[in-house]
Amino acid sequence: MKVDARWLLGAKLAFSAMLVVAVLHRVSYAEVIAQINTANPVDVMICLLISVPTIAFSAWRWQMLAQSILSFQSAVKYLLIGLFYGSILPGAVSGDIARGVALAAKEKTMRVDVLPASILVDRLIGLAALFFIAAIGFLLMRSMSASGLEEYQSMALSGAALSACIAIGVACAFTPWFAALIRWMIAWIPIASLRAVVDRVLAAVSPYTVRPGLLLGAFGLSLLVHMFTIFGYMIAFRAFGIDVTPLTATIFFSCLSIILLLPISISGIGVREVFSIFFFKALHTSAEQAVAFSWLLLFLGLVVAIIGAGVQIWELCRTSSPYNKAA
Image (cartoon, rainbow, N blue to C red; front, side, top):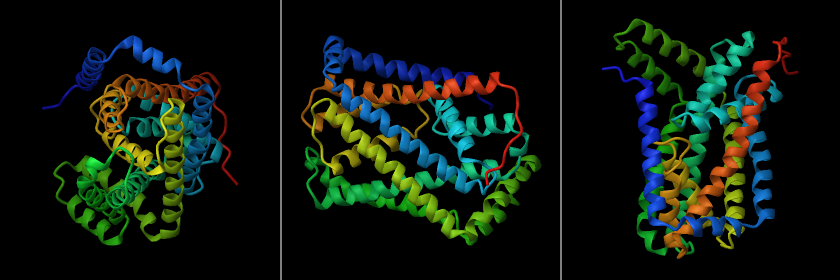
């Protein structure tokens, strides 16, 4: 039975609202506001500035994977548009879909199979890098002492193994034998139209399997994006007077990022607060400080989303111009 997308959106809105209500019932709202007021504005500004290299490296990665059909300027522009839609639509890949649709709608020359293929590969490599960092972080957590997380060291090895398996699984998606397996599976799809779509996507993704240098370069950029984000988290912790080690920030980033992949909320609202309370408890800090911290992360994301909204409005208002291919 087909489920109306509006019901799914409503369910996720309701779930986010339920979690927020539960969180606010547990904490003192006045204390949360007081904690927000204590945040160091200089550190908050640094967190915002860190968004610049993360967006730039993300755009560079997408441009590389688009195989010269996309300029860096266009990659930045439509990446921001995707971040805007990703902040208001449910699902971890909604922003990816939105940037592809927005670009294809505006630039007719972009209506080629390599565009969705580049977005898909961009997402997969980002996930591989995320789980790779998570695996390293959990391994270090197992062998070293992450401040406040000692009681969870026994679970670190399982987390490292699971993360490593997922990272390796994503990497295997770019091997020739995996493409052959998918082709064999396509033949069993009963719906001809769906079979044709999957076949076209596979045909567009297949060229990446023979370009390991390109994939490694994109993977390296993904690592840089995640490392800048982790550094931003360290500064966000410091804004509230909490000094954490790079390892602790890595564990927080990895766990939160993986949880937010689940399409169960809108922009992670509610889920982020609940996880932060759980994590901050291990750091022996208050639930109010945890909620204030999670709201700071939400604010930082919304600032970028507002910029993306401005770019989208500009694109909708301006007249269509010829696309200048990157040199």
